[in-house]
Image 1 (cartoon, rainbow, N blue to C red):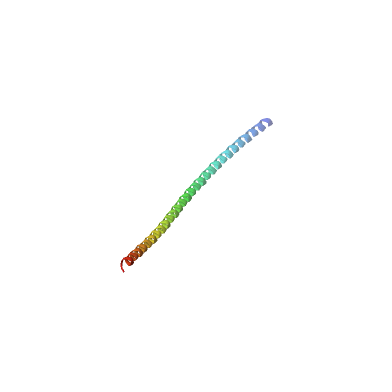
Image 2: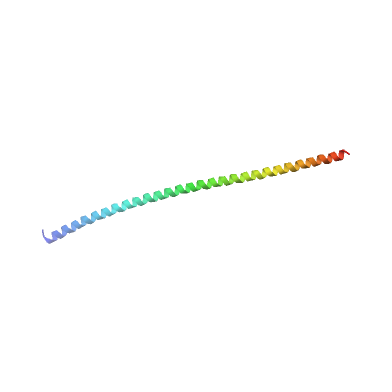
Length: 105
């Protein structure tokens, strides 16, 4: 083999080695991209689950606050109604006493 044949053979070997390195690097990059996509999908799913949990908690708190407001309003209404009944009963009693004093000597 002459020098030029050896040089060409060596260049061809280097080219094959470089092609193999390029293919290996591409495969490694593909695996890394897949891993990154899987991690991104996991993070997204986790974020969505947290958002749904937060939404559910917010709705639960809102419902509890709404129920508390209703209960307080009902209690105030019942207190007001009771006070009105008591005043009405007192007025009826006063009216009855007034009528009895006016009628009876």
